[in-house]
Length: 271
Image: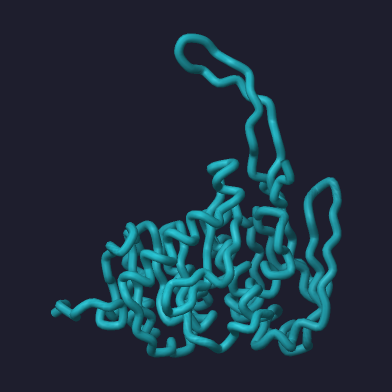
């Protein structure tokens, strides 16, 4: 069979009744990926080695390093025994932002703030989110479609996925990664190069809705963020502050609305 990028085979021994048995299995690849801006190493993230152009562009935009895609002049990927380096040629304005907000990220899939230089850098000024109204049926349709398109997850059980969805729930862009932040960054990068840029839509993710996932969704211009798991308290506060409708515990058409339920097809019963 033709494997999707980021998957390799492995021999395993399965313990079960009545006996142990040898069989083939599939593993999700996890690789150190260094993002290098104008020769300056900014971050090393553990990521799936696929859709790296989308990843680098999306990371640059959602982290506020690139003001717009035009500030990325070129991109080159190089591999070594230690991992993968993605070299971005960027505008001087981006390089200035990078030097102003230097990070030394030792990337971990569960944390996007490791190595941030100061507490002031954690909360960024976010754009106001567009006002769009969605339905519970749209969220249910999006989740079902997203689940069906997780090729790496179906083989390995080890990746997260994120999607950009039309207001009716059609999944327009889907990306997978071992890191939930990375998956959403890949969607952001793909969206910036797609015909759907600037059109209404929402982000759907298979992970919890952490503060950074809300921040990234807002930077993408999402009309809402729908998550399979729960949000954190900081994520809810951030969503309310920037006008982002936030749904968690997405199960088909059922979910919990944490911010702006009236834009999620529900009556606002919050007091």
